[in-house]
Image 1 (cartoon, rainbow, N blue to C red):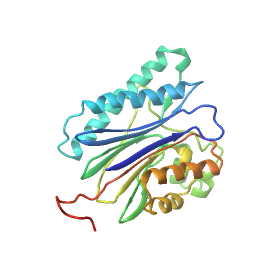
Image 2 (image 1 turned 90 degrees about the vertical axis):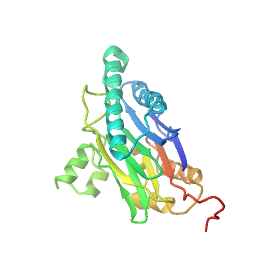
Image 3 (image 1 turned 135 degrees about the vertical axis):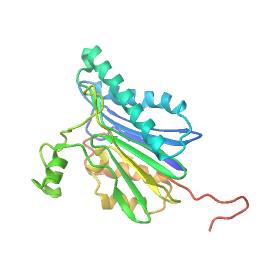
Image 4 (image 1 turned 90 degrees about the horizontal axis):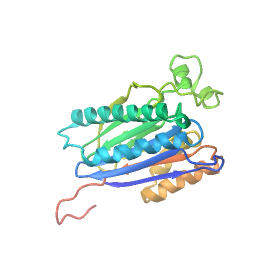
Length: 252
């Protein structure tokens, strides 16, 4: 599988509270985007803790027999990380109230298991089109769902950044989780709101469909977000399933 991850401070923020990585093992890939929040540097701590703990966990992950086992593992480990971040915030006054969004994808040759908390998103590009897989755990998204405001109003709402759910801010948290089938040439995109607040879904789809090198596409998306203001940190992880060929068979 082709894969890439990038994070950028943006053009306004003094430091980067996002953390992103993709880990490999014999099972497949684990991609994570975490957008930290809290007091001075505390967001960095929350997001970096999330990434580092998952790296250790992924190295010890069992061989999943199918999507159900992958979902159970991801949910269990997110709860463990949540408790760790929450405990750290209570034990360290400088980190009080810190937390992070998380969107994570376990991607194998046959399926992708997606879990998320907060407003970092997962999209998929496949034969059916380009689709946002996750639903933001945010105030404005709840207002849209209840019909109180339109999606257009949500884009400029003064409380757009208010989250209803985050990792590490409470002792217990709920993870939304789902599994998708994966076919050759499908692309799974994870990203923080620093990207999606600056680029529309149609722009994301257009760039992903250009069949450029995945790293080039990722760099172009970050550049475009910065050109549109870059007020927030910008992070993304992208995974493309490459077609498998039998020995001696040439790709078309």
